[in-house]
Every structure is written in structure tokens, then in C-alpha cells.
Length: 277
Image (tube, rainbow, N blue to C red; front, side, top):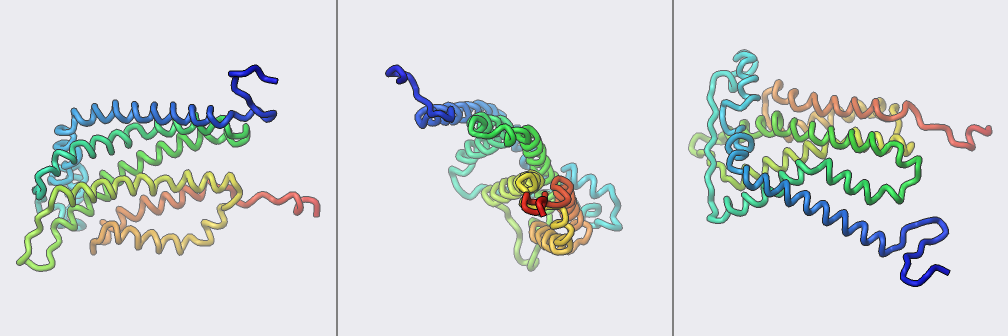
């Protein structure tokens, strides 16, 4: 018998229930402390971040606009021949105050994403088999890198093109577009985080491939269907009649699909029953 007062484990060496809760509590506390520390820094730097980063797509000086304008007026006359300056308005008295806190929190979560994943991994790791742990480092690196690439694509490409088109679109000259701060921030966070999640597609396909659920021939079979779906998705994200702008959004997402196909096995492994035949 185990002495009283000491934790007991079963024959399989599994952690007792209360130790699981204690480990989970430590992970949650560490995650909250990390997000709080990073959020405090973001809160202090928020005025600079608003002017130089978050509101940068509201001006013609934004890096994407300058690059498209330098490409020549023959393909992109809207970018080369017209200037763009968007002024936001605040409709609610408390919006800017609460936005200061919420933006600091969102940025803290985005910046702390790799560390939060690692904390989750430290909690899940004891329950995994050695074979399941082998690909964890690859999944961690792939998921982190692709998330930040997606966020960068959303910020540098998808959101600016969407913003410039919708902010300058006029159903009639009698109506003037006036964009509120709430509307701007909702679209900003939605598009950027959506692109970050979309760019996790290679990680998802890699994991499904390791579980022998999908294989590369499946991508080849549905390539044409995927191209149509991704083209429609790009048109929804960037509702413009300019073919160049549409392709600028479509090509990175389609390349993501093709890259995902390279991460899965060419064919599913044969079952033991097939090998004995």
C-alpha cells in the first residue's frame, strides 16, 4: 500500500486526476501572465501602433499602394493615377477607450501565439505515445510559421486591397462614404485573423496525412474543383472587377493548396490484410 498523503498512480503510470487539474491550472496561469505582460507593452505602444501600423493602409504611402503604383498605370490606373486618403470617424463616446484595451489584448494573443502553443504542448505531451511525439516539433514550427505568414498576407495584401476598393466604391455620386472606427477595426481584425487561420491548411493536411486519412492523389482529383472554390473565395474577399487584383489574392491561396499536397503521402499505406493476400 502507498503511504497516506502521497499521490497514487495506476499500473500504467498515468497521472492522477487532481495532478492533471494542477498542471492545467499552471498552464492557464502562465498563459494569462504572458498575455498580460505582452498586452501591457502593446497598451503602452498603442498610439504609435495605430498611426504607423494599424491605420497605415488608410494612406497612399502604404507599401502595397506604392508598389502597385510603380508597376505602371497601364495595368492599375486606380493605384497609379489617383491618391488615397481615408479619414475615420468615431461615433460612440467610449469606443476609443475600450478599443485601446481590446486591441492590446488581440495583439498580445497574436504575438504570444508561439509561446501559448508551447504551453499547450507541455500539458498534452505526457499523454502522447512516443510515436505521436515525433512529429510534434514539425507541427509546432509549421503551424507557427504559417500562421504568421497568413497574418502578413492579410495585412500587406488582402486587407489593403479590400479596404481601398470598398472605401472608394460608390453606388451613386449622391452618397459619400464615411467609415467609422468600429467598422474599420472589425474588418481589419477579421481579415487578418482569417488569413492566419487559412494558412494553417498545410498543418491540417500534414496531420491528416500522418493519420492516413488523405493522400496526394486526392488533391490531384479535386484540383479543378479547388481552383474554382478558391477563385470564388478570393472574389468574395476582394470584390473587384480588376483581374490583376483578383489574381494577387487568388495565387497565394492556390499556392497554399499546392504546398499542402506536397506534405501528404502519395498514397495511403496498405492495410495488414492487403499485405497477407
